[in-house]
Image 1: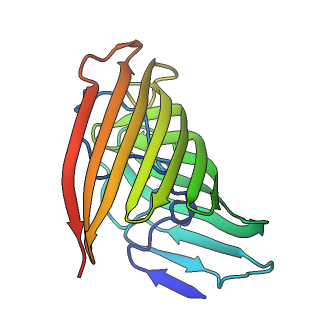
Image 2: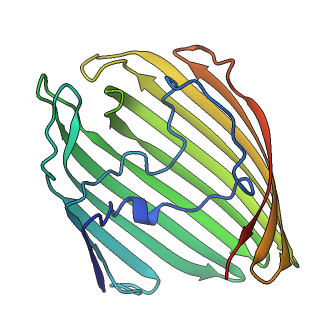
Amino acid sequence: MTLDVIKAGNAAASHDISVPGSAGSPGVTIVTTNNAQTGLDFFAEATAIGVEWHSDEDFIADGLKVSASISADDGIAATTTAKLESSWGLGLTYVASAGDTDITIGAGIADSEFKDSAQDAPSSNGFHVGVSAEVNNLTVAAGYANGDKVRSTPEIALFDATTTKLGVKYVTGDITLSAGFTSAEVDDNGTITAASGDTDTKDVTEFGIAYVVADGVTANLGWSDIDAQNDGSNDTTGGSSWYVGATMSF
């Protein structure tokens, strides 16, 4: 059992499934008003004053680990911009085997309350669930998230956000091949009080090759393509990007 204190984070974010995608970080510029959420833990916020508890492995059942978190108001005053007031989160990871296949299931749920000096602010809340299956050198993973999000800068409310991720990874010798696809959609309301708004979407396709050149040195080649819509119209700032780089650890 462990207990994280001060900037501990949100337990829901600690248990989202890792879904393969590109190698490295290909960058594609998207218009800043597109608010589609491509991460599985977009709703899992926390203030700096918080704690997160993690169980030991094999909690209650073999292969099960759970976490819980809570955070309180850190004293940052809300003006005309909403500020995070408090949050809680729950998460779990379950690992099992079926023949030659190792299966990992991750899930989380969270809620965050916001304050605003000028008006009532909605909450961020949601859930995610994902599964990863590994057999020999092949890994296949999928994840889904749904929820609402308050964005402070600029202040805006995002409702009915959904994120779906699919990915595959294959390791052969010193080479890792990966590919992934993300589909994200959200109701972009423009303010934190609007009842409905226009739809923002992002479809992200990724491929990657990672090659271990030497101990601690990995060369990465990545490609990403984003097809997006902002407020229901085609977003011409999407497109494709390549990434060539290396990571080093000592």
